Structure formats: structure tokens, C-alpha cells
Amino acid sequence: EMPGFYPENEYDLAGYCTGIVDKEKITDNKKMRAGDVIIALPSSGVHSNGFSLVRKVFDVENTDITAPCDFLDKKSIGEVLLTPTRIYVKSVLALLNEITVKGISHITGGGFYENIPRSIKDGMCARIERGAVKVLPIFELIAKRGNICERDMFNTFNMGVGMSITVDKNDTDRALEILKENGENPYIIGEITENDEKIVIE
Image (cartoon, rainbow, N blue to C red; front, top):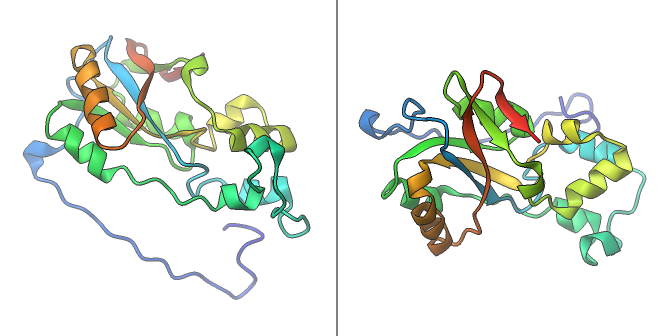
């Protein structure tokens, strides 16, 4: 677990919370259909996932990651990697109060390929437009330094998208408006199609 981080015979104590929701308010994908729109909520950075690979790519034990980096707008690699994870609860709750949301995916470890399919109805596919994804510079740097192919990047990191939300095409404008009113900068990255592949990025 997390090589290079926990020395032998040491351990980490972590806390967490578990939520509860009324059954009638549970978001499910039963009403998902072709033509539904997939909205992205931007991440603030790496979001605490994929750090074993990040540490290896930047060789953090033996490299100075505190120097300003032109590629990262003069911020250091260390500063960018330590950017706090963005939390979406308030904006998503505001959206749920007004719009029927058909699917939500938190893009954590496993990136797009492992997380988005979990919210997709059987027989449907999330077709992601690669050119629409606003990839953060830190991910471009990781890919370049580590010589990591694009598919592996999208299968490990959030790539700049911390959460995806699927709504009816007719609700798209209002959904974007609500999310903007609650501090997000949402944008459309794809749509739902009829396909058993679950997710396609092209």
C-alpha cells in the first residue's frame, strides 16, 4: 500500500463519515437515456489519488519540488500537488433540489474509466469528447515526465474533472446555471448513447 510513503512497521489512522439518504431521494440511473448530457465539475488538482505514481514520476525523495515551474504558471510542483481537494457537496445538493439528476460520478482513483461507468445504466454508454475535457497542466506534466500514455492517465487521474453529472438534455441550461450560482465552473464533456461499452473517450 502506497509504496515510498509508509515506512516498515508504521501505519496511518484515518477517519471518515458515512451519509444516509431517504429512499425516495436516492439518485439512480433508471431514467437515463440516449441524448442525456454529461456535465463536468472542474477539479482543483490531483485530489489525493494516484500519488504513488506521482511520487515515482517526480522522484520526490531525491528531487527538489519546491522550485517555481514555468509549466505550472510559476508555482512549484510541490505547491500544486498539495492543492486541497475540491468538495462539491453544497453545489450538488443545490442541483438535486431543483433538477432530476440521472447519474453522478466522483472521479477518484481509477479516473474516468473506473468511476463514470458506475453511474451509467446497463446498455448505455458515456461518450466523452476528449477535446472538451479541460486537462490541468499538472496532468500534462505528469504524462510528459513519466512517459505515460493518455489512456493510462484517464484510468488513473481525474485529469481536471472532479465530478461528472448526467442530466436530461432539456435540463442542461438550468443545471449549468444552478452550478454556476453555487461557485462551480461547469461545462459539458459528453452525452449518453446506446452502447454496452459503458464509456468511450474520443
